[in-house]
Image (cartoon, rainbow, N blue to C red; front, side):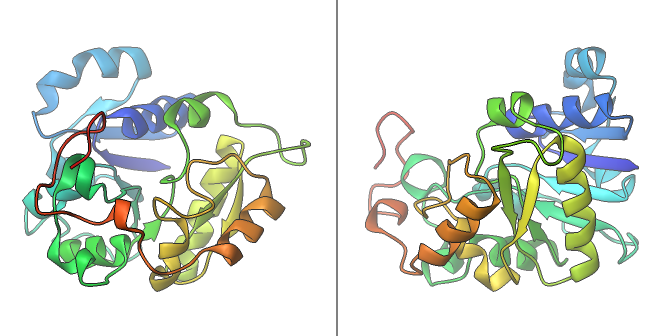
Length: 231
């Protein structure tokens, strides 16, 4: 499968490593240009690309950049890209630590619904609740005791099915968390966020989530600070 990855940070770089090791053809982009990705390409076998090339080269395109940078992507990013191409959003909204206030999310939109609106494409929310190092190291064969499960949410069943297959290849169970408007169940501050639950644990955590965004996950007048000193 051809996989485009927009964002070469911790999650993007980890997915590039994992997917190329599994035999997928990976095109990876960042905001600084393909020439800055030579080292990652050498280490992983992924192909450096521009953001537009990554969006138009994959059967699956994974957007894994800070939430505040999503509106900075080209407005025609997915122009001409077939509707069958699956777009995955791994992002989390960190208003006090990194992103500052984003009006649509502060007004009540789920993070990934807001991303879908910015991109003009349906997205599947995935890979947002696991640490990058765990994504790299903790995959296990299907049926292994304690196999970590990851929630996904989205409105297009065929797209979710593709993501579930990729999760299985990576060594994780997938749990369908419902439509995109239910993706608040896996946002920062939810019971499933930054956990390594098995499938039963993920389902239980999703059921225990509450929709109200906690104050520590909302912007303040001084936002953003940083991860060491949120504002």
